[in-house]
Every structure is written in structure tokens, then in C-alpha cells.
Length: 446
Image 1: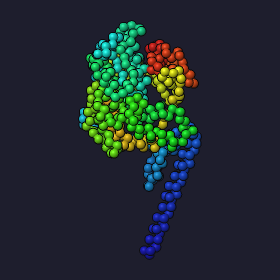
Image 2: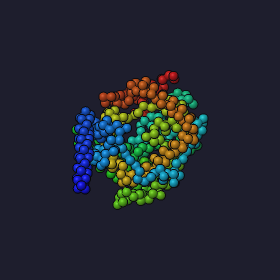
Image 3: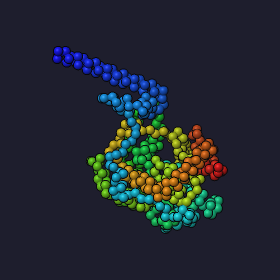
Image 4: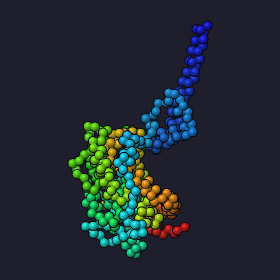
């Protein structure tokens, strides 16, 4: 009798296991077929986008079907291209060392004494943008010039321009040579910052992979080239991706003065920061030296904050993006246009950019960006959430109108088919910065 019960139980268990296996196999094969069909319909997309599209279409956000299977399906190597950064707890470090602050303009919003036309090299005054490469730099330069033109026209009449600087720096400590002597009572200094991985990828595609066409080049070949550049420790303060000595390209670019002998990174221990206290001191000095910082990932929030800090009009900060994928850009010094290659981050590259090694190599950049992000939040609260939200909504409404009315009228240095346009010199403030401003100015208030 006991043997019969055991036999029946065994057969029942075998039957359940068989049903589970068939369900698992069927779901796995269905997933592969669906993903294959989805990818075949989107052959021009990067592989990571194809996979993400397939999974997004196949699995409803409300469904827990895949999560409920035990054991779960084996994850595909193309499962995610989202960058994750949680190795060093930068949020806690910023709070521990009190690196965040409320951004406050040294100039009252009603006092625009920073806007004058007489430049003194011994004590510079004006609007100063330390132009960070591949961090919305051309777009931000255009906004900077627009502010300088419009504020000056209201104070001194049309055709006048406030003192303004919006150029790249070329070497370590060059920022200190230019900005350290400024009159802080009548000047406003800021820069832009961007996620180190995204900034590096943008630099690599813009400078090194400008002729790469993914459909004609194997993904493995492109990934190999990208990884080589991401690990290139050569320091170049314009076209580089890393600065291992100072804890990141953006820290080295914005710091006023630091010895070239210092180093916070040891290649023999790639996941350990050699001197975290020194990095904290560098970030603290940057936060003290600058009046404001713009984070590319929070771009519109930041320029609205600038508007409120400097007492500007909404139209003063209006813009069209200077560079976008598939546009053409003008080579400096030549009337030749080159198409901007659309960058992408494959799962292999995303894994590296999410690694502790990459985060350690850019420890200072991540710490600085987190300090600025928390400072932005504090500044919004200090200004008043309702006041900020109102200004932000007004800006977004005007931005939508601007895109609708001016995007097709703006004349950039390069046309949509890659031809140089001489008339852009009267339609842009400088090169591809602030293009379309005559249309902005002609817009009638609603």
C-alpha cells in the first residue's frame, strides 16, 4: 500500500515537472521568435535598441509572468544598456563632507552691474562660461552670448554686448589663469557637467568614430575601438576622455590650480581610489570657485535657475540645440561640413561604464556632479518651489513655441545636406551657437 502511494506521488510530481518544463521551453522559444521578428523589422537600429524594443513589447509592465518563473530565464547579454552607478555611495559622501551648497549669485537679480563693455585683464568682470567639451558646450555658449547681447541691449542700447567669455580651455590650470583674478562682485562664473560615461562616448564618436556606420561595421569592432578610447589614460584637456591624476576629466577642466604631480589613481588597484580626501578637497574648491554649474541631464532646470539668479527674462535663455545626431557640423577654420555620427551604448559598453573600475577612474567627476545636483535641489527650495515651477512652465511653453516657429527658419553653418551656409554668420551669435536668434527676437508675446 505504501509503495503504491509513493509511486502515485512520484508520477504526479513527474507530470507537474513535465508541464513546467514544457511551459518554460515554450515561453523561451516564443520570446526568441518574437525578439527575432522585432529585430528584423528594425534592422537599422543599434542592437541594444532592438533588444530593448522587443522586450518592452513582449512583456507588459503590469505582467509578472517572467518574474514568477523559477528558475528565471537566463538573461541575454543584451538585456540592459542602462548605466548603473552605486559603487561608492556618492550621495552619502556629498552629505558627509558637506559639499553641496545653495547657489547664490554675488549680484542681486535687480543689479546687472556685471554687464559692462570695458574689459580689465587685471580684474575681469562679466559673464564667464568655462566651456566644457562635449557637455552641451556649443548650446550653452549660444545661451551665454544671448544673455550678454540682450541684457546689454536693455542697458546700453542695441548693438552693445556685455563682457562675456565662452571659449574652451586648452591645458591644466588654464581656468585659474583666466578666472581666478575676476571681480566676484561683478562677474558670474559657471560651467557645464555631464555624466562621465555619456560625455566620453560623445567625445569618442564625435572625434574618433565620425565615419563609422554601424550597419557596415560589426558591433564587436566598434566596441573594441570604444573600449580602447575609454581606457586611454593620455591626458588631453580638449579631446580627452579621462584624467586619472585628478579623479576625472571634468574636475581637471574646472579646477583653478592644482599641481601636475598629484595623482589619486593607482593602475595597480583599478577599483580603489588612492587619495579620496584629496578628491574631496578638489571638489570643494571647485564648488567654492564657481557661482553656478549646469548639469546636462538637468539642462532646462539649470538654465531656468540661472534666469532667476541673474534676474533675466525668459527669452534671454531661449535656445535651439547646436548639435544633434545626423546634423552636419562645420570644421573649424574650413568651410567643410561633416555629418555627426549618432552615438550609442551597447550592453558591453554599458557594463564597463557601470563597473567599479570606471567609476573609480572618474571618482572626482561623479562626486562633483552629485554635489552640484544636490546644490540644484537646495537652490530650488531656497528660491521657492512654486516660484521655480512657474518660471519653468513659462520657459517650457516658450520653448515649444520657439521650436515650432523657429526651428525651420534657423540657419546653421551647415545645411541639412552638408553644405556650408555663409548666411549663418548673421543668424548665429558665434559659429553654431545661438543659431536662430533673429527669429527668437521676432516672436510676439502671446
